[in-house]
Image 1 (cartoon, rainbow, N blue to C red):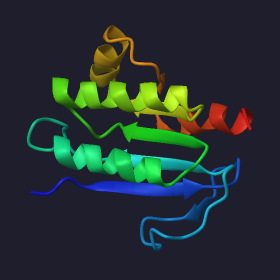
Image 2: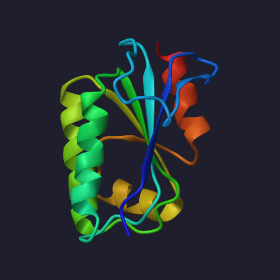
Image 3: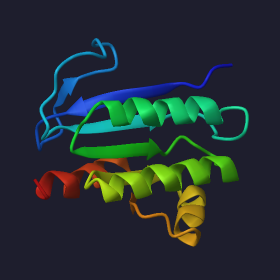
Length: 134
């Protein structure tokens, strides 16, 4: 079974979808847009290469704000946490705003490792402060 992800792009503070996963990946978006990338499976050794590719895909979007939606991820292994830590650290150094939407189990590990990312219980909650920081 493959690793499934979904990307939604937002350009309006009210969360109206500018483009959806069905739209071409090459569609133009402004530098003020936000990207929500949804991960739908556990992240472990079997899926780490796909997780890395998904994060690279998000980075290639060149958006100003990113929400990583891990609310459907029940388990994230050490390799996934290491990849997430690297991605968030690099994003912080390049002034890319990152927010993480996840459940309590994932949040516990992220906080324990002090990964530099704002954590929220839902995508809506993660998007709200990003829209206010514009």
